[in-house]
Image: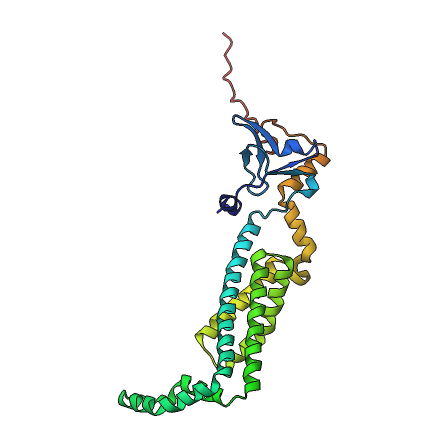
Length: 283
């Protein structure tokens, strides 16, 4: 799959006319439809005026190929972070409301509990064995201060998830570091929780967090891994169409074909030896 072309299909082509006269021919071509400019993302020539112009060094940094795919993957993780923030935020709000309406809820619980016990016995179920009832009973023993601190903690966790989601969605370096560090801090607690109270949901969430940390560290070369930011930026420059045009102009090269200046000249095919001609016998 050509991720660059796919991104251009959604976002449109990115054409740029550099001011430098020695760089322009590498991005400009004459076609049957008129002048065309090369897209800095997918490399195709787009007829018409360029979308932007200015110094070659001021051209926009455009994601290409693997970087487009990486941005798509990070946005999937960002959506998962936003969903977590929504669930945790709703839980925090419920805890906060519980602190204010605790007495009312406790009175209603005590009033309806005999009826619920009778109904559950008729259905052949002991309500006292319900995890939900046990959780509610433990919540009633919490002090108002503890309930408020719990609500604040849940709200803070939801805020962290939102910041993670934003950083991953925009695919900025700070967002990748923030998501990696914030997620790594929670991994030991998730491992502890898995060992003592295993559940499928906990395992799935732990797997998502572990994959995110490994993906960020390896592909984004965080904390100096695989050459760090310098190697990462060098790879981006090596894949940049504008950087290639600037380098070609600096070397004094000229496009081989004026109509298609940015395409490399095709080397000539090796000449095939001619077949031996039969010798005529002299009469």
